[in-house]
Image 1 (cartoon, rainbow, N blue to C red):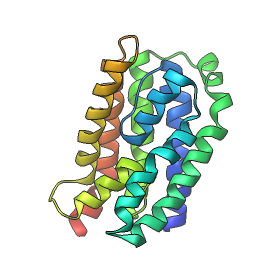
Image 2: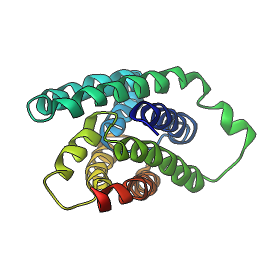
Image 3: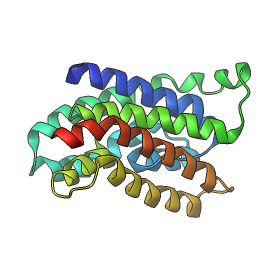
Image 4: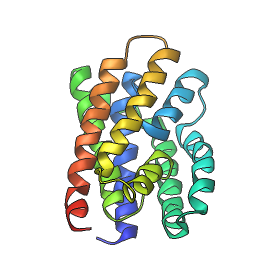
Length: 194
C-alpha cells in the first residue's frame, strides 16, 4: 500500500468509527478527535472543522522539526476531517439496523478508529493532531507510537469526563483502549524494522 492508499483507507475507517460507533453513544475518543468530540457535544460545531482548527498549533510546531512529515499529514487531516463531516448525516442510521450493547459499540468503534490511525502511522502519515505529536515523539523515545497515542488519549478523555455531563468515562476508556491496541498492532512491524 502507498502513502496515498494509507491516507484513504485510514480516513474512511476513522470516519466510520466516529460517526457509526462513537457519536451515537455520546462517548469520546482521544487526541484531537476527542477534543473535537468534546466541542461538538458542548457547542454543536462540526467535528472535522474542529479537528482542522485544533491541529494548527501542532502543525506550526512540527513545521520547525520535520516538514516532510508535516506535508503528508496535512493530506491525512484534510481527508479524514472531510469524510467525518461528510458522514455526519448517517450517524444514527446504523443504530436502527443492528442492536449492540454500548460496550460492544465502544470497543468496535475504538478498534476501527485505531486501525485507521495505525494504518496511516505505519506508512508515516497521520491525521495530524496528537497522532502527529506521537509520531514525532516516537523518533526520540523507544516506545511504540500506539502507546504514546494511548497516553495522550487518556488525558483527553479525563478532561472530557470533567467537562461533559453524564458518565461516559468507562465507555470512552474502552474506546481508546481498543484504539490503542489496534494502533499498536498496525505499527508493531514498523517499530520492529524501523
